[in-house]
Length: 121
Image (cartoon, rainbow, N blue to C red):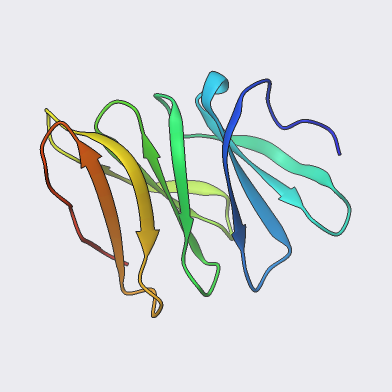
């Protein structure tokens, strides 16, 4: 497989599809990799500010990318485009993100503010 970036930081599989998403920290973007061909698909998705952690909805339609710089990007995995940017607060840095089994909420762990920030799916 061709590398998606020089500094891939996080991976997430978009089940039930065949795509693996890669957070490319050094390039401030994310890549989709077709697991059937092991090839990067299309152009990287610009998310900005050091993408660190990934979570994908159980149905594979959205991905959440926690980034250095106090925000989370929401990616439509069908169009491979950022559809929203959610602020995590001025004094917080995302350290982990996950989605509920039903895909109705995303949970974000942060450092610097001592809290979690549930967001609707």
